[in-house]
Length: 290
Image (cartoon, rainbow, N blue to C red):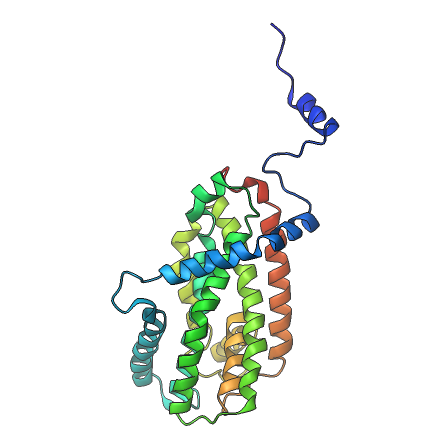
């Protein structure tokens, strides 16, 4: 009985006949072209998941807006009583609603992005497509949910006395930068969760820490020394706080974005999007096999 061919011999045979490796990682340019070709599938997947959210509940998709509104009301009631007035933002109600709604977008991209591969194991193992479709669909799904939240957010700011102004248009580039940032985050956590499944157990604690370090219900400390100075530094370089500040600066007159926020927001968005995508692509052939 002859010996079965070795792995090296099989690889040489495949190369000689131009046979690609099944499930292998394609070169990055080819991967990008294949991903672009699946853009309609990506969008339809996101839209189907968005429509299926809370469809069994009586209020349906209204919970997409009601949930962060209730969170904002709870935080406003608690911290409005606990925090002295000098520690709050100028328009506390509007600032709180903007902070909670924008943070909700980040938190959903983080947690759902982390489960985008592990939660679709059957799809990953049965169909051939660029796996980046799944975390991208997660971000698009959260963008669809963000749309009605932005409308409610603007209504709340108007009810608190903020005027309608052209500055509102600054929300568009601010949210575009945050979407790039969240896309990178979703892809990074999607791959990390493949290697270390226990990360999903830590995500609620991570999101809670980021929440309290994003200046959602308190103003940026003026002091540059001691604990307040350290907190001010953390807020200055916290990407989530930067994007919240950019949106606040667009819709709230008394909350201008900090100096350099646009530059930092652009740097974080591009850096995380590029690194997250390449980091995810580098493990393409491992998805569905671990």
